[in-house]
Image (tube, rainbow over all chains, first blue to last red; front, side):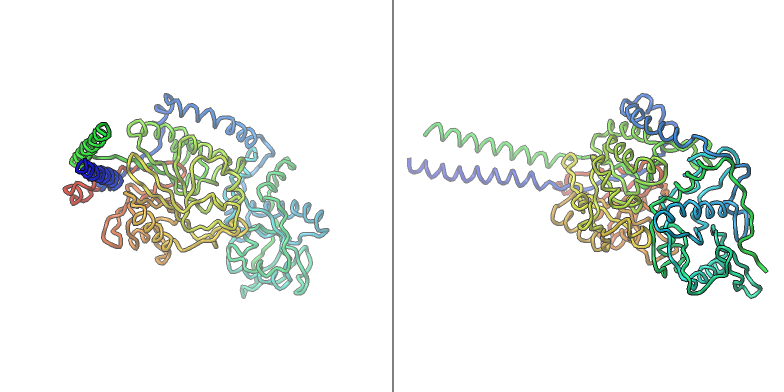
Length: 266
Length: 305
């Protein structure tokens, strides 16, 4: 009996050992990569065949449909008429679409700025790169505004001293790009220096505060517009530039072609 | 006593038997097949491009992508579906619904994991947070610290999947936000060094958790020819170790096939990126053998791309 008991203990230990061995051998299964295949699968109209018979694909299509229809209805309703295609590359220092957008932004931004701060925006400066599409001849819709301004930038007003207005003008001359501009005019002299700088028709004064409307991206020094960073005050109008454009399209019947000279070269 | 004795003996013999079985299973050459499917920079492109589009006529579309993924899942149910960021921004679907539809559709397609791209901050860190309830998949980023933002706790550095016995560790890396995203958008999100984060991740995933495969979901960009000092996926692959695959984004690079890069210890790493706008689906198939069979362990890996 004593012997048997000892034998049982050994057996017990053996069972425990085996159990552990078994667990350890299971958990330590490491895998080795023997083969890798990689490819790019284009998603083309051939996929329609599968999509038309796949239950999940049909379910997804039905899910998207109400979203798509709502957006299309909203985007494609006609807001205005454009008699001539407005293009951002229509001039060296100014463009027809740039003039329009800068004028409209100044005007509509003023509605908010005036109501909130009892002040007036003097100048509006945006960037050439921010205009992402032409304004084509024909019916104008919200979709047009989305194509021109796909980004979510909002309008900001920066209070700049006259000194910075001069920097703004110098930037313009150095960059040689038709950035949309409104409320200011100047002449580029033979020596490449600016003269006859007028803000709202009056000569610029070095120590006066001017309110310059732009977008949030540029106000933070985007596109190297570092003068905006020297602003003495900043007002966020919480008004998206695209919505400014859409609201304008709703308000107007026929889009004007704005060709007045804002920057002249001697 | 006799009864107890009998039970113990039976237990011992059954244990022996199962040991025998498990030993014999080591002998068998057992191959496991894992399919990685991936997208990047889909940018809210839900509908296919129109037939008259100058560059990508009739390409892309979520419905077709879903059908393709479904077909692949039928072929091999062992699939990981990943996205390398910039889910948001590019079509009015985002402007109107703020990314809700994008997340809902990815959830329907059963995406497993995504990392965060710079455009995913386009409605601010709050805008991203607002869409989180619509995602059934998770987000990883090892170098963005969201601790002091509303996203706190919603983005993990890595996730480990157990796919049919294969342990797959996936971690995320994001691009430097300063200068690319307005601070007002990313708020107190902290960008940490991606290389250091990657080194931490491979230690945790490979050394500590013994993952069979380590995948990096990166939004760093494939390569910057004009900025040789800028970190990119090709460079990351070369200066780290224990990463098997980098799935990239940000640069909208259309690679015909995955690039193969030698890493720090001269092992091959795959780097892939499939363009943008849901025009392509990337597919990487891993075949894994049991390592305990020494014959297999020394065979090496054949890469067919």
